[in-house]
Length: 236
Ligand SMILES: [Zn+2]
Ligand SMILES: [Zn+2]
Ligand SMILES: [Zn+2]
Ligand SMILES: [Zn+2]
Ligand SMILES: [Zn+2]
Ligand SMILES: [Zn+2]
Ligand SMILES: [Zn+2]
Ligand SMILES: [Zn+2]
Image (tube, rainbow, N blue to C red; front, top):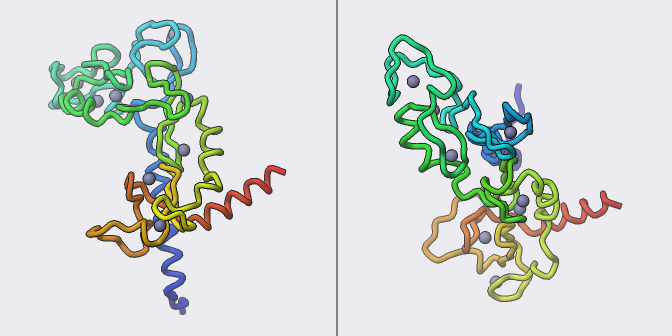
């Protein structure tokens, strides 16, 4: 007979599931069609998928749609703005536009053309460390799993290593200077039990309390300081 689940165990399982969800969400950005790796057809340099090579500016003739990820249009009765009944199209015959945000090709499907510019995941993709956008460096974009900010390929590892840790002085609550139990890794601030909660806001059980400033999920400061201590031990 299977063991009865205790409340504690159920809670732990729920937490695990949630963490998995978060990880899934975060791993999405690198795999987005507008953020896939590409080798320039002319100079061979590795970079993020884009219509023109970042290094030699040559036009890329084997486009991947930044929205739907297709390389070949096989739709016979699709929403293509250029009709091509009975013929498959590839290459430049398949493209309809270049996205201003991610610099990648968009296919000639009406849905992709209309929607991509509004939902492009790289719309405000400016690296929090070096402040370079998609136009200023060739590489792919990443998101910090702690503060959720954009990172360029060069800064992603270094930033995430330091982002995991709060400065010890900032463990104090923003509002009352008492030790804050909750911390927002995005704002790098802490709040005590009284000041993390907003009036008239509905909080869900078993879910992290959102930061009163930026709404990003806060974590328990004691978990952080433990992992920070662990990290510094591991470095020695
Ligand atoms: Zn090139
Ligand atoms: Zn498309
Ligand atoms: Zn088509
Ligand atoms: Zn785009
Ligand atoms: Zn950067
Ligand atoms: Zn960060
Ligand atoms: Zn307080
Ligand atoms: Zn915050």
